Amino acid sequence: MTMSQTQKDLVVAQAESVSGKHYDMGVSLGAKTAQSLDLNREVDRLKALGISNSLVTTRLGSSQAALKDMAASGQEILNTVLAFGGNEDAQSLSTSKTSIQNYLNSIVEKANFSNNGEYLFAGINTDVKPIKDTALSSSSTFLQNELTNFMTANGIATKADITQSQMATFLSQAEATFTSDAYWKANVSNASDTNTQSRITQGEVVQTSVNTNDQAMRKLVFGSIVALEFMDTSLPPAARSAVQTVSQDKLYQGVNGITAMQGKLGLSEERVKNANTSLESQQAIITKYLGDLEGVDTVEVASRVKNLLSLVDASYTLTARIQQLSLVNFL
Image 1 (cartoon, rainbow, N blue to C red):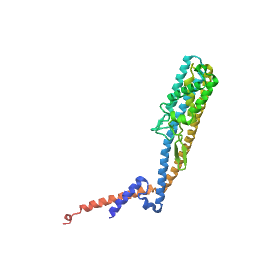
Image 2 (image 1 turned 120 degrees about the horizontal axis):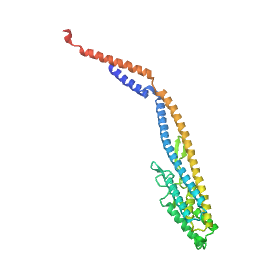
Image 3 (image 1 turned 180 degrees about the vertical axis):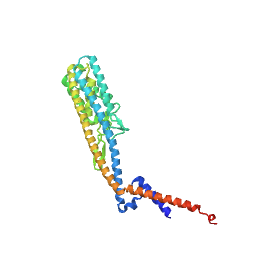
Image 4 (image 1 turned 90 degrees about the vertical axis):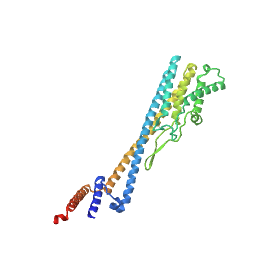
């Protein structure tokens, strides 16, 4: 019985020596066991929030990088419009349109960027590509059809007869339609207006995405499409001047709007960073208290293990000597 109890005590002591905690919390802590369980659950919750926040940080970082690239492409289109708006050379205008097309394709590509299988700029519709595959072609067709209708309604025989004021009026009307929810959501964007929200602490929720329905995106695409469709010699210089004015204005607003979207996500990044610092501090405090509550005196445990091992060794020695006893020795 003594040996059996010694071996049980040795198992407990060795386990406590390895874990640094009481072998049986219920027996050791008594009424404080519930407190131990609650605090361990709190540590697990803080760890889960930390893991979730790391994913949020990755998402925000990827979104910021994509928005930066979109703003840069928009700026390049704006620079092209400013440089070639008054140009009369057909070849130069054709080259500038090719450049605009490439940068516009880049904007759409970044708008449809995904991370971990989720589209970053689709709002809560993270499984749907934000910009439709047919968005650019349908937008070009829309502007050309609208211009034809405008010319018919105003008795304009050919594009060469359009005046500067008429072109400005047409583009104003086209913009109102193009950037409206009815047209934009039906022909360009699949995104939801509702952005994703993430809980970063027990009582704090932040916006962790922006979407392609933002007015900045609408203006950026409209300004680009206008330049792409009408910056050519089919229009007289005066009308083309109106195209340049409207295009550069919308591109300027779009680029600034994209930068503002970056700012929103930047604020969320800062809040997540502060939340992580707070979570780490809370976890450290609770972990320290749990160490005091559940921990054992490692020096005392090591001494107990040593003593118990000595007892076991002694018992084995005694058992071996008993087994060597024989009646033959006494006959």
